[in-house]
Image (cartoon, rainbow, N blue to C red; front, side, top):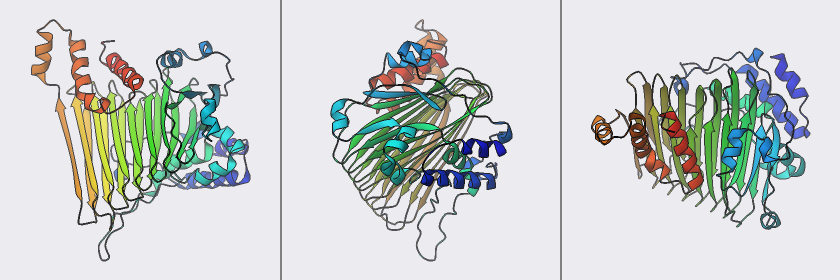
Length: 450
């Protein structure tokens, strides 16, 4: 994998970051690609020839929105973000500035490459602190004499190590103590170079009692043999509130692998929404580490897989402190020959009494040829908790479909109505109207009712 060493040699940055990149690449070279024998990757295999991977081509800055890809222009016409970045592959090609009143309060919103140069102290403090190069050891703290869960297989960190070594850019958000950012901030990531890879990183830091919403969108045309590898680090300090939204709508041929992890402090709240609609193969990990007492994590997701798409979601609600609450609701739709995978774990450490944790996964099957694998799990090491998990997989209600069609509604429109209704209890919990409207438009295209 000489080409990765060559690419790393071309990356400029401070010594502490260069050292971390080198260590991450060395780790990457020692790890195997996770196989089906690894429980967390049992139903998903990524076939990738690393020696053949080449980085996405460089892109120039554009001065006007009209020069951006059509899909981005369409989204910008209907979004309500207060400021945003547009990245094409490794480069920021367009940006808007943060409102002056927020800058005056110490809020920082820029691309990660610029943040390393201009805000090195803050980046060095938090970068890799939540999503390190290696897979985090989320072993449950168990009572003496009992057997805790085994540590993750090291190979689970293969792609995280690559992302840690070779990330080219991404977004950086920093909100000082007590500051509330009312309008969402956003990042629109596109790719336009087939047969390449892009490694990106998002770092959101909300200090004590701060508040911010960040929308992370990914979109492209069909790009055969293309890889999007990423990491998202969410630092939610005591009393802070962070809402993070990820909308993945890559084109056909893209393999998407991303680890998202939140570190949630005392009486802090993390609301996350993961939307998976595009790409040929997608593996998304969403983890909440409830570090402080009274921490709260809401984890929502919806996905719609059709044709030969393969969508894999892995979740972890790790309760490390007492009196914390987490609520997970994942809903998916599988059509044609698509495959959906969900593996979710609630871990409760010894001493995390009064834990209140819920996990629910529901799948709607539109085709008898589609497949679905669902593995909800609990591991509890405290004796005063309230935890539940559940999973259901079911076909479309034929009576409801017949009822709609008997009233002159086409099959495509009737299916769109039923799918939208099925996903509504997720969408109904998202207070971002432009995001909900955009997702509903993707659903309509998926069922041919747009």
